[in-house]
Image 1: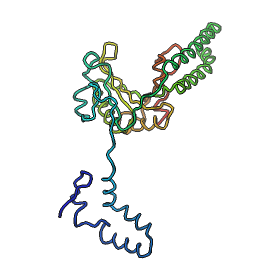
Image 2: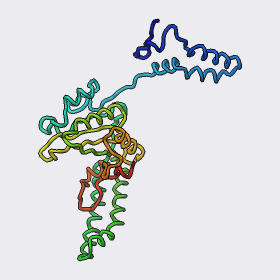
Image 3: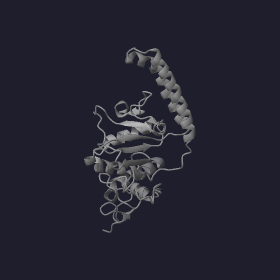
Image 4: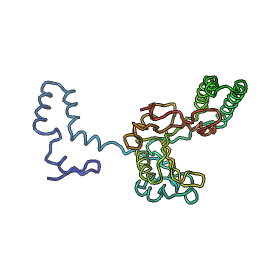
Length: 292
């Protein structure tokens, strides 16, 4: 029996000169009976669902055009590079800022990477104005309520802080600074394993648009690394949640974790809103515990 290759896959035992395109004698009889009854649409539909027909359709699909925005960059995954070779070439557990640079990157080659027309200057101007306005209100309130309990002062500031968070989010949308990222903090012992899963998921279009892992540096925690998994739009909560669920399925995030992981928008990074900031703002937009 002579086998036939379909789309580069050996069809031995599946499609051959002796096999029937219609799927065997029983299938042929059913198809012929439907044709006799003039049930043409049903016959065509039935025929299209047969294994041979499905294999033919699959083999006819054009191959996707892959575009790596970081092609040619020495600190990033390349299109002609396997993930295993990539990790071996740039192992995050041993790479340093001095010999590699601060980050190692893996981009999604299946999505468009058009330059985003973000207005960082506009965001910085409006964001700084909003933060300064709140800071002035906070200082005035604390002065007026001097000697009061921190919880009492906090209740007074809470509505204004909530309004500030809303205004900052709107500013990020207005100035098109929409990118955000889920953050993982693996130990040095686990970072190669975790980064390999993230890089593979990103390059195979299962996660977001980009991913990066930190290298070792003097100003960084020597026992830990940061992995960022980027999504295109922090306001697209469906996509943000989809990426989170994929991280769970990969075993990188535990649904029953007491702390979970957190998602931060780049707008907050540009405005210097970090953990423990002077405005009492949360440094992240979302947490895995509230999203799962």
